Image (cartoon, rainbow, N blue to C red):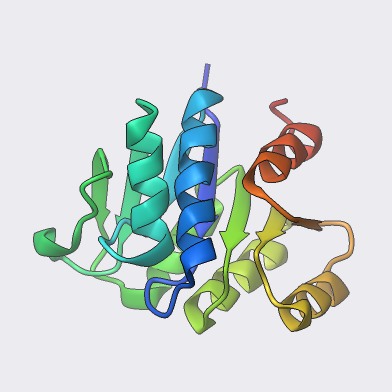
Length: 164
C-alpha cells in the first residue's frame, strides 16, 4: 500500500516564531499519523522545523532540495532528493504531495500554493495573513481550507483526503 505524503510548505527565510512552532508540531502530528512528511528539505525555516518535528516523532521525511548542496540539508531529512532546479523544484514538492499544508507565507510559498491549486490539489492554510487567505480562497474555494492550529490542519487533512 502506498504511503500518504503530506507536503508542508512555508518560508525558509523571514519565518515567524509561530510559523516555526506550528511547523514543528505539524511534523510531529504527521509522523504520528504514519504519514510521510515532504518539505523543501533545507536546514532553515518551516522546512527545517517540520522535518525535525517529524523526526522527533519517529516519522519518515523527504526533502526536495533546490540545489546540489549537501551542506543545506535539514538534520530531520531522511531522504534528500537533489534537484539542482532552484525554485522549479516547487512543482515536484506539490505534485508529490497528497495534500499541501502551508505554514506562513513567502513568495516561494505562494508559488507552491498556486502550483498546487493549478494541479487541483487540496491546500490547507495555517498561520497566513488575511490577504493571502482571501487571495488563495478567491482562486479556488473548493480546494483551499483555512485552519487556526496544527491539530485542526491534521483533522482537515483526514476529512478532505482520499486516504482518510
